[in-house]
Length: 296
Image 1: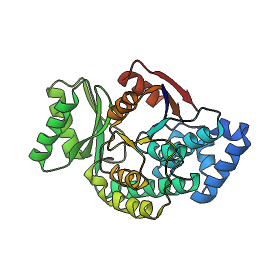
Image 2 (image 1 turned 180 degrees about the horizontal axis):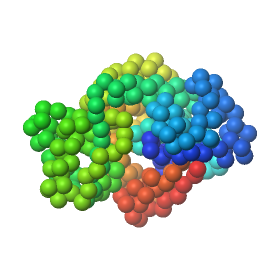
Image 3 (image 1 turned 90 degrees about the vertical axis):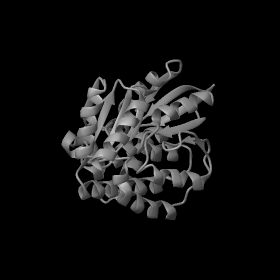
Image 4 (image 1 turned 90 degrees about the horizontal axis):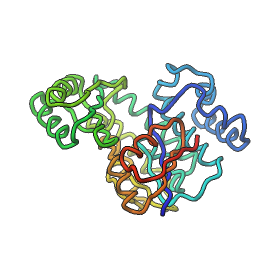
């Protein structure tokens, strides 16, 4: 019986996030103020009093979700994790939770990642779409076909749960794939309101920028394994953790596969730490037999 801690990614943000932590916990307040210094602007003000639109700015969204999750983890009583994982951006939170990265180092990397991804999005119009009610293999097959026919990029990006897969690529290729997937029997194929094609080859320039920063960063030996997105398996070697974190920008988030790997390795309880309950819902769809709860 093992306890897994999981950390959410982008799209979990909401106005007022983290405010309760700041107001009720002195250590949390110190960490938020330290984050304001590191980032060079008062992200805490945007989190606590900003609008949904304010929170959608890339330089805000990723650090905001990271801060809420990590500060909740560091200031709330909980048992020691036996294993950790994070969805996309959440992998950085997971690496603070298992001691691989310091709070400060991880926040700096998250800020670099957010800005690099924003720049990559501006280089070429691109998007993502969620596909519901279709086997992963069929979605993969149609992505390959559409990419070959259009000579553009469209790939599976987020394996969220059985019957929910997000695809990513150029506008034309994603729109074409959505039409073909609907015709092939998908329940829904819906374009998402995102800034670009995350977890696809179109993020290569961001990958290079993040790689340079990660290679200089200090990574410690983890206190417990991290189940990383691109390999969906337990990883404990710092050099491998670094490489997987770099590859994640252009590779898919294998969330379903990661949760199943954690269950196979003994996880019976999953605690989501951070804003929202997105991962709690996904874990319940992937592994109905486990206990799921949250800390926010």
